Amino acid sequence: MTDEDTNGQFDIGGMFRNSATITFVVEILSVLVMVGSVSAWYIGGFLDIIAPEIQILLLMIGCIITLVVFLAAFSFFLRFSRRLSNAVVGPGLEQVRMNAPRVKGVIFIYALLVMTMFITGVYTWYLTDLWFLQPWAESHTSISLRIFGYALGAFFISFLVQVIVALIGRTSTRLIVEVLDADDSEFLK
Image 1 (cartoon, rainbow, N blue to C red):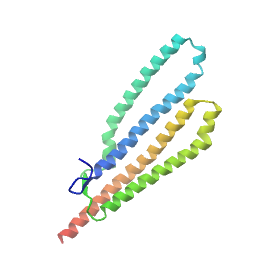
Image 2 (cartoon, helix red, strand yellow):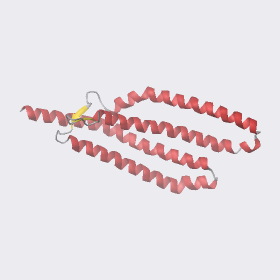
Image 3 (tube, rainbow, N blue to C red):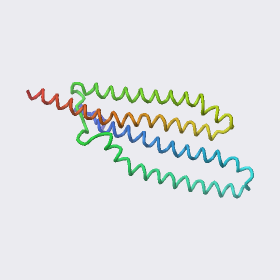
Image 4 (cartoon, one colour):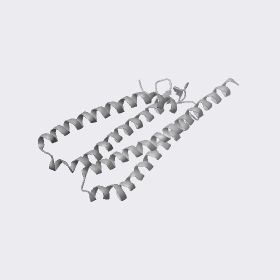
């Protein structure tokens, strides 16, 4: 079944929740990548003086630590995912009629705002990367620092989108409920 079925119903609550959840997952993954890339940059300088057997041992320990951190992040995500989705969409709004007047306008403006915030975030990260992160990584000739810059960009962009989703999602759901209530009361007159 699609979001918009044959009755013209659209799962607006699912749209807001999915937007918030996707950005939250991107934030968690980007933080893990940032920590890993900075750790690799710091450790990379010491690997030349360590024996190959110890390097293999350190690699295995690093994999164990990464998996434990990933499991902790996954647990954090599961714990706060429901709270995040409840903060974005209030109770009582799941599906709305797309043929109701002004509902399409609210959804379109919401989508336009999220897209504009995404584009603004990408451009801001691009400028930051161009002026600061890329020269920093090139000065150290480090691929790890470049990966850190990309992960920082992913975190920044998803954080901006998540802020818009959280702030506007709640407001948009209230607005849609008011629009639907106003349409129902006009219909009953």
